[in-house]
Image 1 (cartoon, rainbow, N blue to C red):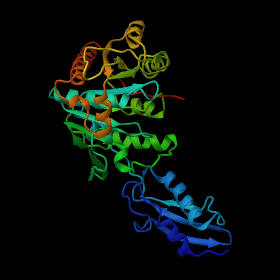
Image 2 (image 1 turned 60 degrees about the horizontal axis):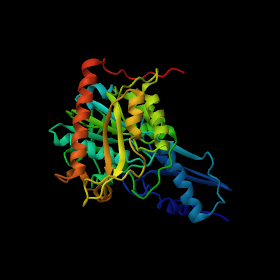
Image 3 (image 1 turned 90 degrees about the vertical axis):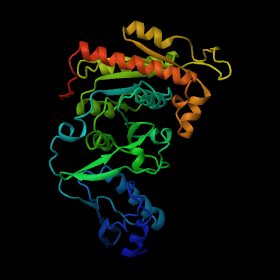
Image 4 (image 1 turned 90 degrees about the horizontal axis):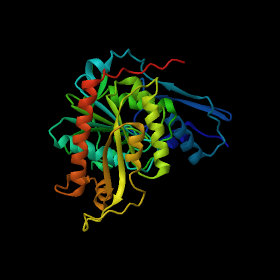
Length: 370
């Protein structure tokens, strides 16, 4: 069966660029379509030299063509990429992006499902309520949830050029400046990225954002240990890390791995402390009752064993779940047990940072040698 260039072009109209939500044909990204027997190809033109979607866009193009035209045409190795020449970056971190940031706090967890992003969200807002200037980076590239929790889904950060570098203005809500890869993709799309693409994206969120003056920049990391963690400590000087876990043994086993990663010889980032989430269930109508569903004092015992502070124990309360789902974080409920728990937590985090800065040298960026 023979195909025309128009048919290929029409199939590619179904492919949208994640940042603009426009189809790539209307954006003028498709050029030089050719067909020779069963082989075909075309050129994808990108406006940015370091567009993080290059690899994923090629795959989506092939999927769109196969869906609309079948698999008779072979595009293997025949999709060329055209992009502007990459310009040297003038040490953006020092000159523009992070020069006004006093402390960078990594919030990590050994495994998923322990409420790390919920803790990062409520902690950031609680810090802001003290009068501090706070920013939050959603570095969970594969599962960005911060836009939903901050009720800013669908918003697009403003981008402007500064000395030939595209700088991103964070979205702000509840007194916190927020950036997430979730602002640049459809919330229902799954991100299938190789490590290099994910690290490129996190570098942009770190180094090409106009954070201004901040007392604290909280970085919500993906669960586990990954390229994202390594990229963070290579790109910036992390003041300290906070490990979030639940009390049960299976979570604590992974929390230990997170602690060892940050305190290892190559990385050497101080641990500010442990936060135990889902410590007990407390019904709103019975604030004095505690039901230890996942075990009792698991993080407290681990903190004592590892000689690191236990910064707080956060109960399971229905309003915490509802706040995350509806974009109205529970810490905003004045006088609630959740608001008090995070108020106490933020006070201990501030003290831990002050003690760390008073007694230890600034963290050095990591240089990993093969």
